[in-house]
Length: 399
Image (cartoon, one colour):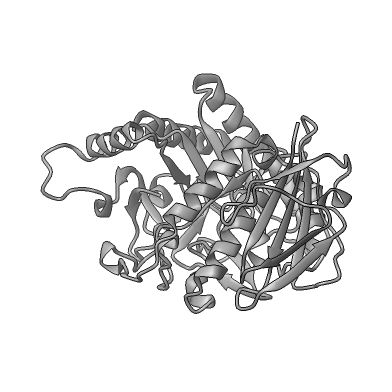
């Protein structure tokens, strides 16, 4: 989010939705705050970038004037204290006491659930956030990552997305759905979001749950993978700076689902975890790592083949060497198929062999190697290959 913050300093604790966080502004600049933001968006657009920002509608800062001017928009406990949002992390309830939870009149009837008081001015609350979205669009933003989207009623999102698109067809909405079960993700995605987020970051490259979740949601909305986020440790820190491991995880993330996202600094192997309060430009790191060339090649592959930009039928195929991942994907819109053979071991080589690569494909069609590195000019049968640590080789059917 880019709006003004409450006393905790968290980027997700918004005090004033129509003022800009000074951290994003040039304090010596003569232009008004929102004009500075528009200039930033215009500069990005000139570089071929479209700008996205967070949209936080589940809660605001506990010091927001909204609690005084519109107390009916919030949830209150029996003692008259505003209620705080929470989430379960590793089975423990984490309450954000710097946040005040809006009341959308969600009825929590059911076993083990608490009933929330009905919204007293649901229309007013909706109109407020409609105006927030319009304000951000006027500054040039063309997409919104909807924070904690699953904690806000589907009916709210359905209306906001539909009415915004009627005025601004180009605007995209991405639902932050991390931490909720697949069925809840399906319900949230069904509100009409352009994208949801998947959980590939936490996959162990062997358990069946990831593909099962993907299959449940892929026909509802396309999803976005990521090797790290502001809510996780830096991957370079987890892997002790292994360049092979960083490449391995990015290649898989980019090819697994329609969307892919990286945190600022991933391309340089940053190790210091991002923090929604404390991270500043001074946290830039000099690591000696530069993955930009590799990431560019992977992105070019993704952009050149439609099955990597859609939610494709996907399966992890059995293979005797368990240090190798063999993942098949097929386009849902044409006859294209792909096969990714990924060395899960980013420290040692691993050997792959087969009578023919085509035996792993449904069509049995001839294939070409489109790997980002060490590409083969000819795919022989029988096929043998020693995969370097962390290396992925990628085949696509030839038409």
